[in-house]
Length: 65
Image (cartoon, rainbow, N blue to C red):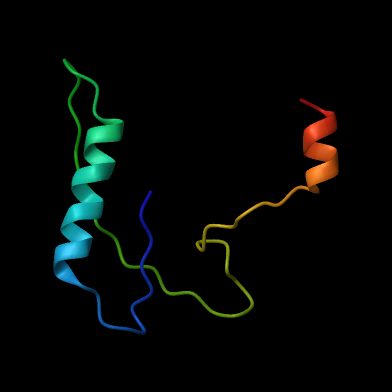
C-alpha cells in the first residue's frame, strides 16, 4: 500500500517510482490485477487510514529471537 499526504505537493517522479516498486513486489505471473487510486478524507479523530508503525523494545525483540 502507498499513502501520501495531499497537504503537500507530491513529486510525480517519486510517485511513479513508488508505484513501479509496489507493482514489482506484488504482481504474481498468470494473475490479473487492477491498480486503484482513491482519495480519502481524514481528520484528527479518525486516522485509521494512516498506516501505523509498530515498535518493540530491543531487549524484548532480542530475547524472543
